[in-house]
Length: 596
Image (cartoon, rainbow, N blue to C red; front, side):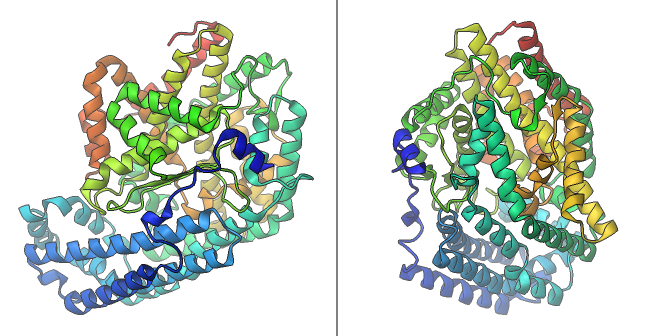
């Protein structure tokens, strides 16, 4: 079935070219790079361990550059192993190679961990002298960021032990989850996750109902495994937070995102305060669908008059490139590289993991994008989203490996902005009023998924992490109750959530791989709505400022990077401003006054 779809959509040949990294698993360069990384890590440890506090600025520059070059070589190996596995999760060879590279990374990491520990322990006065040296200006933010973790670091023996155990820790459990989901078949037709989920967007209610039933049945058959994985990783984080003295389950993620707890709390509470928009929309949608109330499997039902034709890959590519080009020819040129140079993997394949992502790889190579393209409007938006990440990563690459690594909240800003560019371009091509109403409604649903659903998921994470810490292991029933509770708070009675829907927490990978990550989506969406308003006001003058933001990568904090735009992330009114844009869109479709 998927082969026929790939043929129709012309995605059969849209396969990424991993030979830009290595020629294959038997490439001798892999062994050479592993050997080099081992030797370099051991040499660095031998030469510098115990001496970091004594280093001059010149010595610190040399050491930092060596560590960065080592990280680049490791990054190349780990990227290849991960991407190779992603499209063939059942393959024993691919899985074994990924695990091998992770174990090698652990071996290398335990040699170099001394640097972060010793640098964090340097007294503030001596550290400031080093940080203020002009020759280290390119690494000032990176080195300062390391020191923020000082209160949460353990002894060198303990840190080395944790690195040694890492390959059989969280990443191993996440890998098990990905293997199960990659091989899981749903329903009588034995289809993969992406194919079943795509049916939730079908105009036929019975198709949607059956897709929900098939997904539920497949998840339920493995719920004991998913529950065990979830509890294990909840406990893993609980122990890590306790050992590192993090005050709450979300503290480490906030620190990684370089955000103050106040900023995140303000964002979350402000979004929750406007859950009424969710209820208002889904009641409106039920009326358009002539239903008394939506069932959970009706949430993504296409509205009447929504353009529903299958869009081929070449057509989707042209739509995205034109949308980017209208904003910035440079953005379109970079995006075109992904299509022309085989940096994208698009077809639906057995054993390929679900979802989509952009991987930055290393600055010396290029980013890669993975999607599962089924030809609908949502998938075109996903292409734009992931290419937004890819363009961001490409523009930031000249900053180097350390400074191009962007906090998650700003990474999501680039992707969501790209989606909005595509939406407005597509909307400008639709003249029929009813189709425009439906198209704007579809965009609102996407925004709700990014802002409100992700915030509700953050609330689920909060309750599950705190529940695990207070009540020990959580049963599948308890996790499902927490899921339904936080989802019902968002929908406020506008959607009937069945008991079956209660187990749908179990297929969401972010909860396992990156705890606390999901609020980054809401942050990015609301920030983008505010930035896009600035673009409408400033026109062409806005573009270079936005490009400069992407080029900066992670070379400064989100607060500093957003200062040129006049953004105050701690101001509730700023976040309410983004939510008012959503309300304005609701007013437009409610009042049938649709404007571009």
